Length: 139
Ligand SMILES: [Zn+2]
Image (cartoon, rainbow, N blue to C red; front, side, top):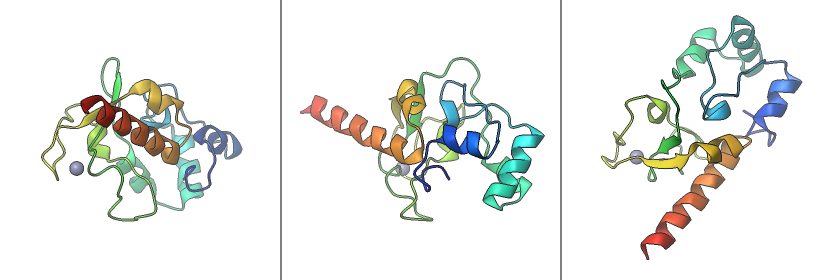
């Protein structure tokens, strides 16, 4: 939502009093469990049901998370909404390892890059830079 409005998640949090916890290893990408207050605010703001909000949340990984995993083939194209950047929930699961659609190993973006990105659009920009760096390294 922050990406769509071209603002930082932090600003969305502050302006709409969401009280998000953004202090996990991956920042806003994988928040700590949402309080009833936060779920209610998100329900109101996004105009989606509480169940839909709960279904979007992925349990934080146990122990320190040093990377945000993604599929380099899926990450740049959201099949449900081409113009909206996205991050698949399955990539955040503790057992994530392979892309189910492409059968390729997921790529690891350093967690610091995820935390540094203020919203989903900026995160996808970081992924582009990371992919370029990986490509240059193999030349
Ligand atoms: Zn994929």
